[in-house]
Length: 462
RNA sequence: CAGGGAUUAGCUCAGACCGGCAGAGCGCCGCACUUGGACUGCGGAGGUCGGAGGUUCAAAUCCUCCAUCCCUGACCA
Image (cartoon, rainbow, N blue to C red; front, side, top):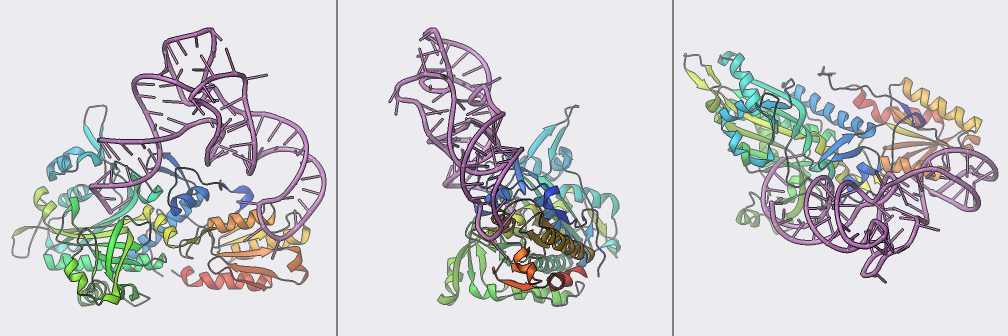
């Protein structure tokens, strides 16, 4: 439907497990404490390279790209423009903004062969402001929102929880430039809407909560939190906020009033993290609606006004010829962290349960009796039919026993499984099983293909 | 960064207190048996015991230093 930037989009490649690289572990590596970390290691999605730094193995990489893709689509739907900035930055720009000294030990500082001070970027306000001031000088060029999805590095004292709190992480960060505070607040609202849409598409409920500005600063800021017992933030909210869903409502991102209405709808109820929690306001909520829980932060939006534009001389001329610093905001989504958040929110004791929108493969095909002519032929036919429809199955064609194949499929969390065995084939049927409910239904192979295609059909058109 | 713990086979871990031939389960390879939930049996490969130094006739084991990883806390997308 909409055209989106596809530099990071990888085609979905159907796969026979015997040819794939899926190093699943039966036992849990001892370093993993929380469920998402354990399952990502066990499902062969990531491998730790050093503390807080991970290699993304094929299965994890596929999910990472799917999440990234949703973010790209929703950003561009909102009118934001993709680009790419480097991971390594010069310290000079950071001296200019004053943050080279402020940022502290969390910033990984590097010296190159000429003894120049460099750093592995933890964020990109300085770089983007430098780009802006070099090329934009007129109010006529505004509004402008640029974003990228890039690896960042923050030298956490104590990385933990796998990709949830790594030192190296993949993040979307976007920056809006506007001529006035009002215009910048519309950009803020636009981001809030686009984030709500993004998280919902990933099968997550992420609640916007009033946040603290932190080192980036900012008068207006909300964090988006996914409720999960393993979350690092304590959160307090009115249970009415969890009833809100964005759904498939139509949004005109240029409609100021409409975006403002969404912001009000989603942020008027009490919802705060412990950083900004206000006991008196919380207690004003009817007692049966007061909730205390834990949450995983998966994004944050800021309006910080002219903090960087003033420090770095990013100005535009207005219609009456005056030079004014631009109003800016920055807006982040933790892409790599989202894998952990989704797993925390969607798993059982057997493994991951992927939402259809981010699953690494659309469905699994389990051949219960590899080598049986009929079973092999039926599986091949299923694989071909699904692939021909543009679907992306993972066919377990290994000479494993049924139990091992089921255990692997459950662990890696494909939402649908087609089970093919001689017993069913005698009656002309295979079995379609939902990972989420565990419910199975017998049907002809043709019907199974049709049903899986139908499940994914709405997404295929986007 | 403070406090604590760990490092022995690909993974999970015994062995260390009390120095004396390097171990188990799972995984892997081969064979057999099997094919609806990690089945069973037989055979096999795989480790300079994190690194360096020291004590000793002899060190995975005792001592010193270093490195890495993990946990709790403070910090943090």
